[in-house]
Length: 280
Image (cartoon, rainbow, N blue to C red; front, side, top):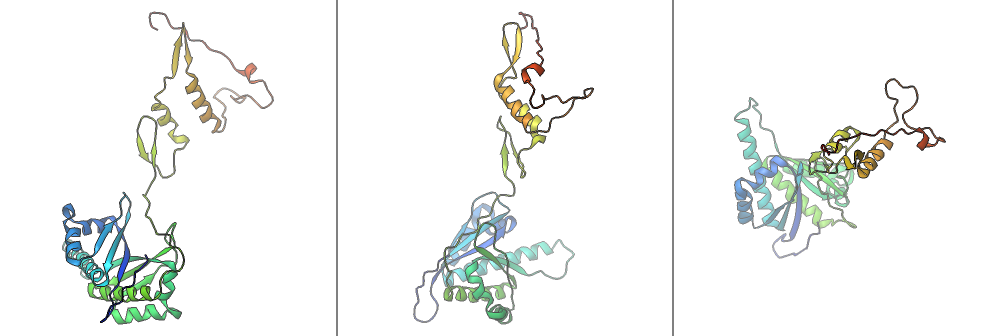
């Protein structure tokens, strides 16, 4: 978020990039059916409006352009959200209309200027615009940015955004900014065989049956008259067994695994399974 100053006579005329953090439902409202709503916003405001890709609970909406175009885009977004609130109230017993809420993503190095000494600047913005402004105390995950929440009537939000833009121009970000990038709610785990499951905790021993069920390798190979476990399968089962605590089978009092210091070859027993030639 690096503004390029282009000062002109008669007032503020600069190119800005403002980032908004929205939930999936809010993004859907902005995009509209077949993208018609966001297309109209782009055309009517003159601002570039980009929405981050990805199947995430949160998305980043980036608005870039001259200040007047950005203010128009913000106004259209705020009034669209108010329209959504009014429509949702038609099927709700609630009588008081909740405020419109927007969340800006701002470099943490600029948040001090937004708050002001002893909170004087943010207090001034609240009193002069009528909007509620809150600056998050913690940075967004894996970034150097914070969320700035603005709530109120659309007119109050637009005036508040104008004041925030002026402060951000007067106090550019210091140092490098690591932008916030929303992550998917869970990490997909892909098992052999192509099956995908959303498992935020990752694969565990509880998934052992699934892993074995979808192994593409044969469990046994036929050599002569005997069925011998496939070496690759034995290796995988051995690795899984080593990751778990040894247990004692029912009816035994000694561990099923050889104790340390004993010759494992002497402890192992061999079982052969004979298969008739015609069955093989």
